[in-house]
Amino acid sequence: MGRVYLVGLGNPGAGYLLTRHNLGFMLADTVTGGKGFRAAPSSTYIYSEHPDFTAVKPMTYMNRSGRAVRKLMEDKQAEIEDLLIACDDFNLPLGKIRLRLSGSAGGHNGISSVIEHLGSREFARLRMGVGGADEPDKTAYVLGKFKKAELEKVGDMLIDCRNLLECYINNGPREAMNRYNS
Image (tube, rainbow, N blue to C red; front, side):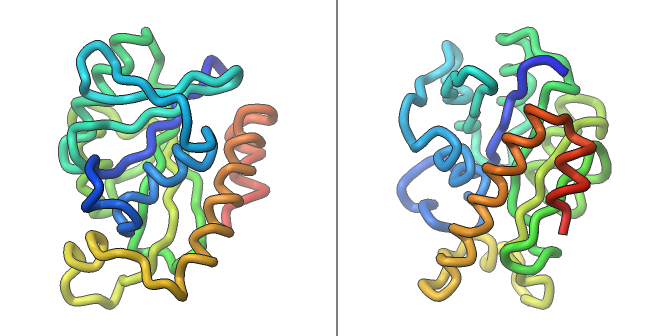
């Protein structure tokens, strides 16, 4: 496996902080300590380089994330197997995580955009549960902020995801799936 490019999906801007749809950004901040992000020449994404991985936050908004991922791959000469896309998932209960090496978008517009721009479903994705499968207005739910009572569970989930990333890098994706898929 080459260098890992962790792409946390989310929406830029202060209005989206602590929203369910920004879990990917929250994970990128967690694994980097929230420091060291810099703009790519295209300003399509911002990134932070670390010894074992690169953390990336697309600046194209969720529904156009694929454009930033494609640009990242061109700029860094990355291969599709080097990608690990992290996003929220309302089909998983709050706090549950699931790593897959390929698959459909599962109703997630950011993943749909990545599939469209890469022309492939064959990339790893880390889905982080936010609950809400029974919510009538999914858009309002995922764009809503986490409730105070949910934040402890979110923090625990982000730590689990950070540990999964470490396992993914050191032991490969299959071992990370065996250890962390809940």
